[in-house]
Length: 211
Image 1 (cartoon, rainbow, N blue to C red):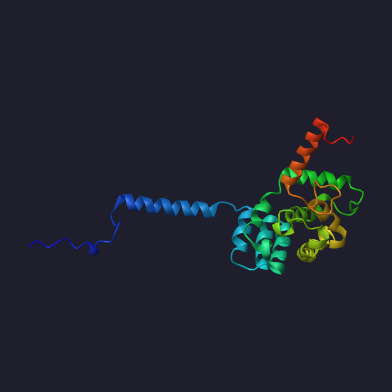
Image 2 (image 1 turned 60 degrees about the horizontal axis):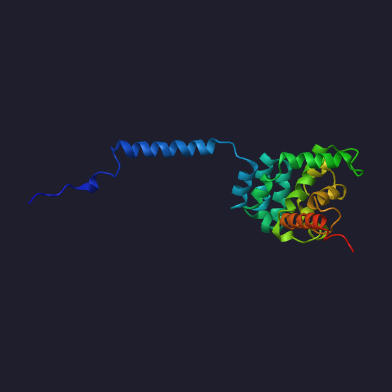
């Protein structure tokens, strides 16, 4: 009776050109992925996933600037949405258009700080902008959520460059209520859109004109 070959003595894949090629491709892909520069949202996602908010803030701040340290400070103090992975999406949502909007708003505001440029106070606008995306704040006035935001404004360097919270809170307030006029609570984008459509319909049909 012939003895069957002992396959256990030959490691699987050894000497197999195809297996060797797959391994090399996997190693190359992994190396390229780690070599790519990380965005601010990448750092936020990775940092808040397994470390404290304070440590996350230091890591985020290295790439995302002052706002990264602010987010990390809030995450370390209260956790919640600020310490979750979805905050990275909010960080990424601050676009060039948003930046230009806040710049124009600040430079034309009568409460502009005489000793601070827009670049100096940008983190305050960014903080209010991010807070708008927090579902825990939906329907809440700025004054209700302000204590959370102020906790992130704790860095001595930040306060030295951007100003004390009492001086910049109005900027965060404006960003939090952006697009809502003098309303005391923010509304969802969908609600604003529906309201605009209804007004257009009323103006067109006469439904909005009092008898």
